Length: 244
Image (cartoon, rainbow, N blue to C red):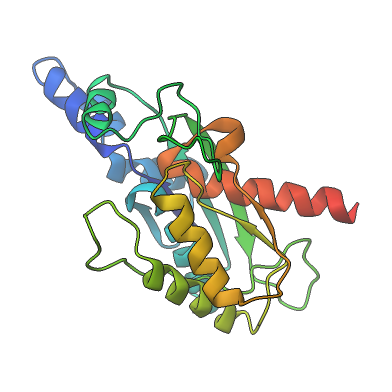
């Protein structure tokens, strides 16, 4: 079994290490090292498969999910524990996001709303156990995953519509599916990001496709490195309720 952890609050840990440089001991050094987080879980449970932490900012836990699915397809492990965790350990990161004008005035994500003015930050932790099917039935089957990068866009933090279209098409191609019934969107609640995300979905699905669109950030704000896992857990819970 492997352990793959999506985590992105590295700046917080780095700042803590600098603040505590004179008094940090062995446990403090390991506890503030993002790379050691997944290893601690494998150490605790005796897991010996692929083990690493992923830091790709907001997509960290979904990139970990993609890596877990790939390792299962390659049979490098028979199960994968995929998790996302985000904690705000230092005030410094809030100052940085305020300087970027990324945060909303009321601390809330107003996803797909004309009042969208930035996002609110939250903490979260979630995990899913992925297993190979081996002919057995599963409550939820992951049919396809994909990752890519925006490349050059209007700015470093600005999303890229064509790249988003490509990653959705790649996942659908692997899943051998030509339609989507529902989408758990990134949906940060920004005037720039939300329209680009919806526009990319419109281009992929074309006119006439009825899709249920949601984003958990409108309920619990943006948990950054754990945001993808939070949305995935919500999607699984929604399917459980629908099918029960």
